[in-house]
Image (cartoon, rainbow over all chains, first blue to last red; front, side):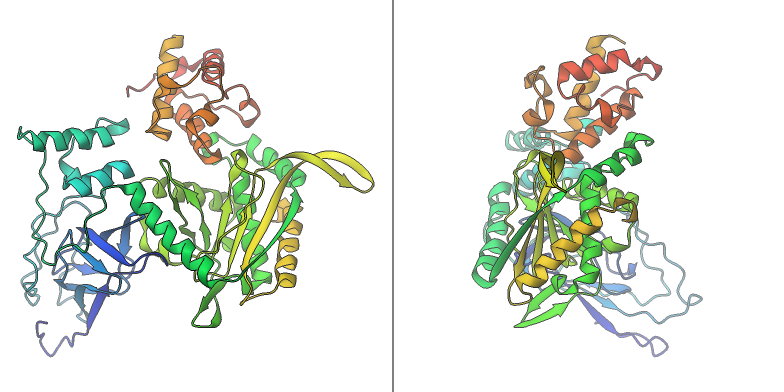
Length: 424
Length: 89
């Protein structure tokens, strides 16, 4: 740590490898978006980390000035390992010239001379030019292959839609390297100090299966699940939605999923014991209602990033959040907070799937709400049989945290909310 | 705009949604969603891509008509997409 003058008593902070889910043991820093001397504030994306589930933009938990990058790009480390050190800044604006926040992909100027010179990291050389991984359009599969083959995506010419890099582009780049032709790119990684732990995953799908396996095995081993289900008549909800959408252009249309999510979020306000965690033998209620949305990735695999404060979003905002989340989940654009903050999970098989979800809880959460396919079924009501759009809603819940009676009342509340779509 | 031009615009939109699918390999008279494994969000994005590329806003009530590639091209041809030029790509 560099010493600083007495006018600026600095407090050091460590930035550690976050746990982006119960299934994560290790992460590989695939890009640094900051360098020593850069000023960051809480929530800034400072690095990209690859796990078995993909590449995530990692936000920093506290602000300050980056003092030292402790882990070189390309290094695989355990969750909790120190990635970088920060020094706190308590300097007035007149002492330190304002520094623009680092622009992604554009190297920022060196730290102003009036500042204490950033310590030369002992463990790594200053990172010269961090390839602008963000901003490079590439399919998750292409990223995976590029990483495992050591191809720098910033130097691959994309031939996909809007110049996106496809699997074929990466393979072409690889064959260029192998054949020794003017290689579009051979990755210039900063030296890897600690050897990667284990071989890098060469098969993205296999890595994803491992991650899913770790989470669901732990869930089935540790969590005494109980299951409940009920059928919900969606006639009012879908009629309301059709009217809502009829006046809108395609960009502003709302899918039934948004109504289902909103009603679950609102019901959790009344039944908060299902929204939280089971940690160290005790139930911990969560502060906000952050719905983890199970998203299947094209090509295989599953991820459940969070929509923050879903109970407070309007239907339109919730739909936009969902649409944005799905898009980013499929293009490796998720942020670490989205991977860490979910307080409950909703699995919605959509209108092409099976009738009922028998969920597996994502530890340490205590509940998973499932929705099967919405389809027309015979529906008996008030002595009459009619045909209605119906969905089977299910709850998998941790019996240590709640009992079936409580879970049943929760499902009834979701049902009730879905009968009054205008109030969602 | 010719049928072929519309067809290639539809293919381009589909490639953006499902990059791993070759649209030319799809049966043109069977539902796109089943063949390309599009969920409701994917299909909405497909409609959005068509709107952006061709300027045709397909209402929900017409989703049945555009379920197949053939239906899609027919619908778009009938709804006069030449108001906006098709962007290359």
